[in-house]
Length: 381
Ligand SMILES: Cc1cc2nc3c(=O)[nH]c(=O)nc-3n(C[C@H](O)[C@H](O)[C@H](O)COP(=O)(O)OP(=O)(O)OC[C@H]3O[C@@H](n4cnc5c(N)ncnc54)[C@H](O)[C@@H]3O)c2cc1C
Image (cartoon, rainbow, N blue to C red; front, side, top):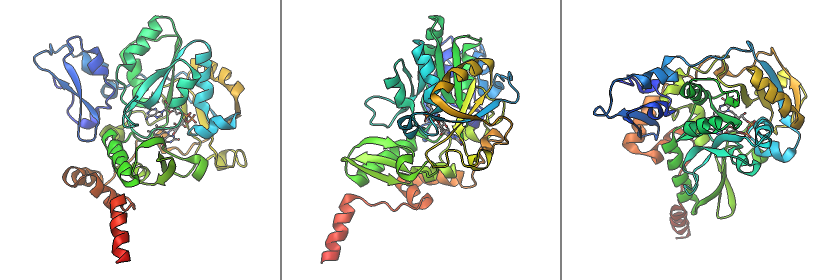
């Protein structure tokens, strides 16, 4: 069985691995830490289920209940919520309604004990645990056994909210293979998902440079630099240190998963019941409203189920109807453009390593504490 002709045909969702009746598929990391399926030909019986269930290759299930969607700009009523959220805190307002009904929420956090190295999908049954999902982690998350857990919870009659990228939502629907009235899904408008291995390299480098372990981090520190600035902040030895290293590579798209450049979800047929995003272009769409660079969410309502949940979420939000406005998000129109330097970047990474790439592809100059000492003693001579 040939599952993949081209790496760009796989978004790493693990559906093929989970549905294989022979357990013949294992997900293995490539040099970027991206997961790809490998088939054990001795176990494979050529049933073809893996290909049939691959939403990325076979055309994802399109959910055209509202065409076009209803659209809202919004912000959580509580300042402490939107301050720690990536945009305006829409996710907190929506997910809280599920938790209040004793439901379970799936979102993206850190694997315990991995020192922030592993970005994974997790479940939360309390608002405290759910809060870990707030804030975008600009790294592809590993879904692990999440789809199995979603199905078990639905079968047990619980309300389930699953949040993730468009490809992850499309994959979940394909994995489940039928509609569950208790399942709610939130997708994000997504630029692309960066390499898990480069994320680990980045943390290793910064820990060496800053001389200690990272104890807290923020992919975008909007409290210090504003919502629109893209800089990562790490806390090391009790001090916050910001840089524009990972963010620079992200915006150049050089470390994105190959499938992102042919993403089938970068259009207005959203796979989730609700879509959330940063409300870029708000200055023209809603002039003067929330004009303080503290974050505004854009929410698209794609299905009746999404609308019901949204109506309940509104009580925690200030919101404004922007249905019909021509949003400027290019990932609602087409995939992120394949950068001309993509192959060169990965060749450099494999041949010369991460630190070489940082100095070549970002403005950051690497300095280790020892170097500083060496420099100081040079100066004092
Ligand atoms: C990789 C990535 C690329 C994005 N690209 C864009 C973009 O181009 N344009 C745009 O407008 N918005 C983009 N977003 C979405 C945006 O950054 C916010 O996540 C979104 O607006 C939600 O903000 P909030 O304040 O409502 O939620 P928050 O409270 O900040 O909650 C964050 C939500 O995002 C989910 N999440 C966090 N990290 C990941 C991840 N790695 N993979 C999947 N889900 C994740 C959480 O589970 C949670 O549901 C992107 C997000 C990610 C993770």
